[in-house]
Length: 296
Image (cartoon, rainbow, N blue to C red; front, side):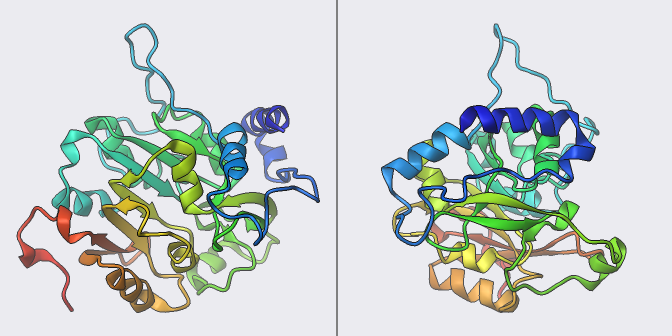
C-alpha cells in the first residue's frame, strides 16, 4: 500500500488537472477501520506510521533545507492565532504543534512562525490532495499526513468535499458559509475518499504525549474531533479552535473545553471570516497577566 500511496502522491504533485479528479484508492474491505478498532490498536498505529506519515525534511551536511514559500518576507501568515498563542506560552524555547486543516503549509498557517523562527516541529494534517501536494513542496520541517482527524473514536474512511480552503468531511452536519458557497457557484464540487485516524492514534504513532499548540480548523467538525480526544492521556497545552461552522455554535466549543479545564484566553475574529477562533490554554501554562483573558 505504501508504494501505491507514494506513487499517487507523485502523480498529484505533477498533474494538477488530474489531481482534481483523482480519488485516493483504498480497498473496499480496507482493514483496521470501524467501531471495533480501538484508537490505541498497535496495528492501527503501525498502519499510520508506515503508510500515512512523511517524516520532516532533514538537514543535509549541516545545511538546512530551504523553505519554498510564496512570500518569504511574511513572518507570520496566520490571521492572529499565532500572536495569541505567543502571549500565553514560552514559544521561543521550541515545542511541538499539530495543525489540522493545514492547507498548503503556508497560506494562513498558524504554525509556520513557530517552526521557521523558533525551532518548533510538529505534525501537519491535510486531507485535500490538491492542498497536500502543494504542501509537499514547501519544505516544512514537520511530519506531514494526507489524512483527516476522525470525528469518531475509531479510524474510518470518509468522503471529503474538496473546496480549496473550505474542504470538509462531506456528510458532516455543519453551518455552511453562504458567502463561500456563492463564491464557488453552482458547479459540482469533487469528493475524495480519505483515511481518518483518531487524534490519539497520531500521538502514539509519533511517540508524543505533550502538544504545546494544537490548531484545529476543519470547517465544522471541530467539536466532534475534540470529543474523541482522551484528555486524561495527553497534555495539550494550548489550542486555537475555529467555531464558525460548528452546528452547536461557539458556545458549544467553549463550554466543552472549559469543562475539560481549559481557560479561554482570546478570541480571534475578522470581518472577512478568515478567522473565527477561540484560544484556549491550560491554567498551568499561563504566563501573562490575567487581564487580557476573555471572560464574557
